[in-house]
Length: 346
Image (cartoon, rainbow, N blue to C red; front, side, top):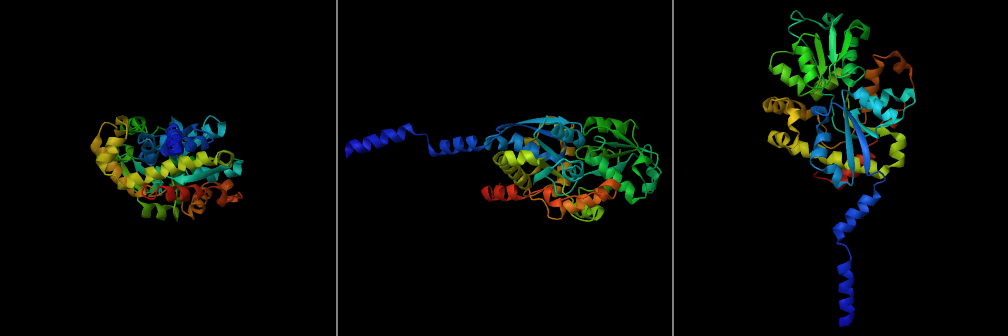
């Protein structure tokens, strides 16, 4: 009997601990442990959950090594995944809708923002006499990148005012110091951008806000319903081939979403890279407080979100208005539900 116990003890000593077994099994389960994620303007609060997932090690905890490629705007991040140089995009939800008629099956699987957080403002130096949206006709409007969600916001705003996209000049200025410099130099008459750029300019009196979708209720008034914003989306083929990898990404992002909701300004400042602060921590804190309500609390994509996005796109694009779009295929909450069950408290 004693000999048998000794043998059992010796065998147990040779076995890895349960935690190690779990970690190894999890790492083996992920089909694609190394992947590339494209984003357009990673420093923006629009993508804060992505930064938190990276900085707090949530991707690594899921057995993933995520290489993040940062582009000047969401349109370029989209091009990266369509061209095959990236596997997944952290970008605007509406891209999953507007690419479907073009034969690109993209699907959102976890939400970062429940409102676009895009702010449109005019330059007080060059448009001191601004009174109505009609005054934008013939003006130069800065966006993160042509074709990005900031550009879509401009087009939608113009359409509601009876103007066409061709009535203005769209200029890509990026999502950081380039946008600030263009505004201060008077190179653009208006700017469609996000925080912390917006708060930095507004606090200095260098931007007069005329439309603000950081406020969820205001966003729903502008778009006529819930308008999902930042999310992770990928080609349907990637999701089908790598469901466990997709689940791991969703897990990390849901944890980040929940951490942000419980975090204070000092926690956020400590978590993000110094370069994101644009040289002013107070501005970044104000920007975070302004944007926090528009960030998703749990990664869930609203049921009516696809319809709202399609309606917004159709209002500015006649081809989209005529297209047959399967809105059920542009998003799924299946991965988010499992992530919330696994991490009920983040």
